[in-house]
Length: 123
Image (cartoon, rainbow, N blue to C red; front, top):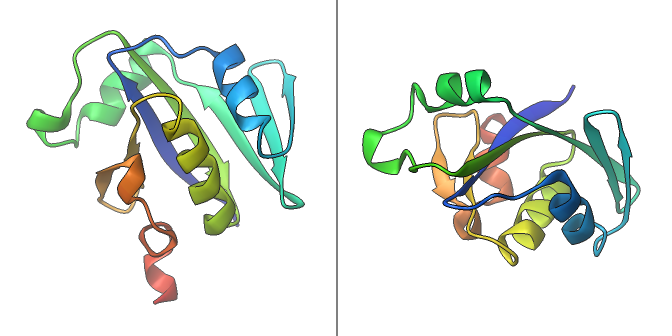
């Protein structure tokens, strides 16, 4: 079963090409239509850029002080391995400021993300 987290790049325009280049440092990356597929340590993650309508829904449950001003780039990331997801997030955070919504009621700066935040039932 896969899980999804949300990557928010506040205050900048991060493009699909940027994400592909940055993740390419960790493994093989391809783009098929709107989906970025990265193979890292023989496991896959999938990213899709969110549209404006989806972004409004994403921020609906965020604390208001964390909601960034535009421009903001938002991507969803599907993963099966929390470790690979964290490694990918850390690589992206080396290139641009990044906030992560874990979909487990946590919104954290990318540098603070841990595997246990992505798998709370595993503890």
